[in-house]
Image (cartoon, rainbow, N blue to C red):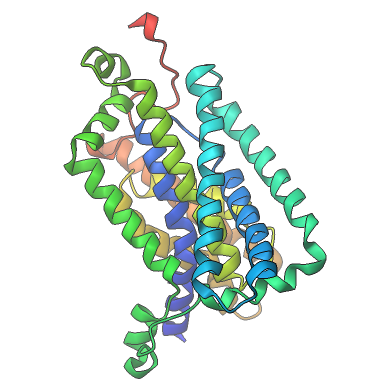
Length: 318
């Protein structure tokens, strides 16, 4: 039973890992994007809509196309959402919190509009979900070890790879150091010759593109191609995970498993009431608040958000 629980937690963790990794990259530029749930919803809807038309065009005999084309359109949709957010907050200097919340409302509504176009034929999309869930052929022969390490679809492993690459880029490359400089003190970075606007745009667009993949994964892999309106809630948890893991993508790998376990643990408890289920769902947020309190008490510089997070940069004020 424990192996099955841990396996399910790891599977769901990919949703949180995509969302949190993307948001970490965005926040490292100094921008707080509360539009992650909307971005993930749009990514899922565009990916599913693309899946539907690809199946109509080539059937289900081309598994590579059935995964790569929807993945590509999902990434593009996420990047466009990031571009819109950047235009509003970087170029027009709109309030980041208000803009992010508006993006979530807009994204969730837009996703619903897309899905309603093919709602009657949504079962067609489920036929392609098996390609997202394809596992290593030798997994079953390895017992519990194989189930826990080799029994996931490609997007789960991709989420881990992206998190590791993001960690390396942020800490070991000039691009990453420049990005963190922009997030800490954009005026100083600007004076040093760093293109602050470009870094904010690119970081946000890449971050949103990564988050959008989490939406596609949730529907096509975790839900088996069945559309469920759960992405918004998972998106908010992804934002909380950023704080829980102290803005470190590698820590998000473990943190996302913790959040995944806390989210599904109610499925393994018999006789639990609806009220108790809602209380259990509060735990990730409560743990995140606890992390904030602890890091504030110890005042560790490495456990703090970027200094300019949530603050718009006005070049003329430097």
